[in-house]
Length: 455
Image (cartoon, rainbow, N blue to C red):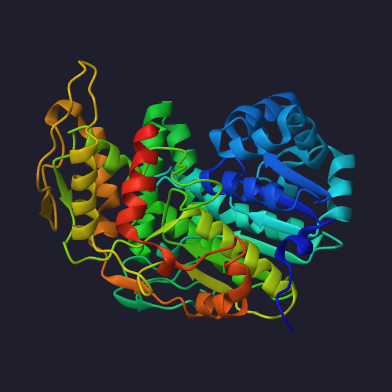
């Protein structure tokens, strides 16, 4: 059995997407609407106090973005009409039961109509408050799963996780699911319900102490890191995402896929090269280096920096859903990565940055080009990586990102390779997710770095 026509599969389908205002979510929404404008309906779950504000949020944070330039140009004055005909704004929250959808009629319609659920909503801050990260990344997965069980026509549930759920594991990291209660330390046992109770207890203690908002925020951030470290994870983000995976992977009666991307970067080709939506994580360091703020970096020159363009992640998601629905690939986990097939190490990454900013220097507020260091100093443990005049924010960000720049693992992607074999024809038809097709220097010089600095 062949994979067939990818866009044709989505014709007439009703999709629920969470996380549409996030980087990956935006690119998924753009791609689906571009390649298959004849979907029946696209429900987009948005956190807001009412439908009007939710619609405004989608307008400004999603559809007005440059990402949709091609579709706006193609449809002209009909673009707004097209969006209003296909997109249904749903006020809700993944951290709540039944996704917080209060409109009973809409909830009933959704449960009757939805064929596909794509869950990418998450808080990606490495040091998020433990209560917020638990509610969004862990219980959010549970609530989406519970909602999916009630969808009468559901064909597939796709959950977006992260390749770093296995923490700082060394060597080849396989595409295997977690079992319930698994930790990254053999000496500990993980109980999700206990973690929830500990959060409630900590919040109650803070309330009893009449702690102010700032104190609560800082204590809950520290508590999340402590609990993550106890069980072997480097930060709250990967800890809570791993627990979310446990909840998804231990349910067998719903056709599910878990996508684990590595460090997601700007678009490679679609809808055009170099689109990026924010200056966070790796983009934060690129921006700081180009502006002369970051002068050193925690990392080992030979360490593979596993990056993958966002359009390749989205293409893999779309192809995996079709392949799963046709039982051509029934794997649960897919590591969307580049470290095995086409690795780039930190040394080459930094050389490409130096080359780009030498040719395209940042112009400061005084109209002068910023001169960057010829070679960024690399440290394997800690360093004075930032301009001291810029405060501790940069230092904190660098410390949080350190586990990824001294990472000693590479990600097995055999399940993804099997998917590429099944999808060989469609890869050449606008659904490329093969990292071997990336020329890293060309991508960085002409797409990724210009895209970051444009932000």
